[in-house]
Image 1 (tube, one colour):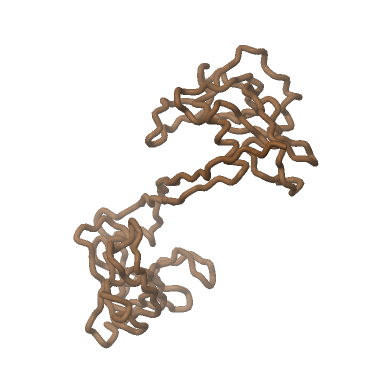
Image 2 (cartoon, helix red, strand yellow):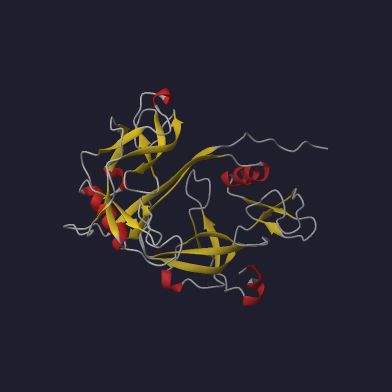
Length: 320
């Protein structure tokens, strides 16, 4: 019996990143605009509590609340945790404490960073004050961080505020990003190695006989390992598709273009890929396509029509 071929352990750094654009209602607009103007606003709930950051809906009654108040820029640390290794994009580039601060006049706590020389300098109950950013745009980062304060007594109660400012902030863009290292397992490693040789490899379930591409190492339906390797394709059938009209950042493809689900011949489910070599408005369900590889590419660049007649709907309807 020949031993199964071994493959090096693969790993690759991956980044998932996208901008999330949000429109602001009157309460959040006033809060962020206030930060730009060095003013901290909260909102009064139905039970009389002052919430900072302000909520748009009452946590008790779920009714909309808009009674804005201004609170102090000093407060008390209610709890904290030391961050000895700051990450990219965090408030400070040196070790600091994450703190929950109940600002004077507020009944809830605000999460932010505290600039302190070390964990021995931080304690629950310590007094702190806002350190404002030099340039402010109407974001939570307008508070650069908190810093220790000398005041021993609260600065007083919250005062009503109209929430009116010149040129209010009406929307924000929050950039979500996840950095991680991906290490494929046995099945994915064999799949990627086959792709490097311009072959597509799946694995067949010993019970339901479905061929999974990409392989998963186990059948999600039957819950059993999938060890039998099956080469599929290279041609396949377009089962469903969409026309993309928004150009993605760092993607050198002119819009509009088409992404589709493609059931490769012999596969038990469809994978996705870009469809080119045909006008976007001529792509259709049942279109027969084949992969196009670029020199040195580790996966198909796109799929193009084979010139064969379209596949009958009954041949791929179970793969939609």
